[in-house]
Image (cartoon, rainbow, N blue to C red; front, top):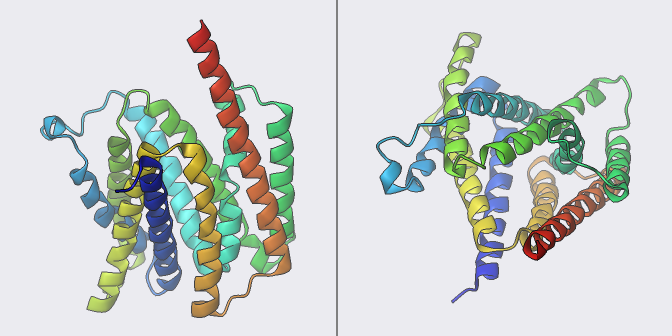
Length: 294
């Protein structure tokens, strides 16, 4: 019988595996328009949320008191998803994953302006280290390849606002409803791209494309379960296994070998996000202690 922390570790590991496999299929799907791939991500991702809807909410599970904030969350999430799909197709897998780790850095900056949070010297130091890591990976310059480095950064920006919006929504909305509306919006908005020319997939390709949504859906559910059973501080560092998977799949499927600058930059970004994460845990403990003492 597994303990709660062990269950949390297991769910986080499964979540990382599912997200990594989704990335691999997205990178493979270059024969199909981005809009069509978004449809598979949204439609086949919706299915799993019906397994977590409480029985007493089945008749009105879609009701929400905050449609505007849901819309902003869905829009920012869609921008992030499109950006990462483009990046996965145009850049080495390990490079995209390395830059995507920088999302907490942008979340820290957004939280200052959107949540009026105070950021101390340690988190500012983490932001500087993180940006240095991004600069090392991307080598800013105007070349055909470097232009595509913009897309994982756009992903980080979009995901950062998503994190802020979810933080605000979760005070009144269940997590499954937030995720449901996102998948639903992806599905409907993807139909707008049909005039651009969708491609009829073969049966084999249809199954693979379907797994983009399936892996994405179960990955989100497993991620939520991981945070439910275990302390966030214990399981979050496991997310960096995604880079190991990215290097593995990139090398054996596409013969991609990560450069030294990618590895060095990734290490700096990881150090940066770990500092931010540890400071957030520390600050929460202080707030909790003050609340208890009061």
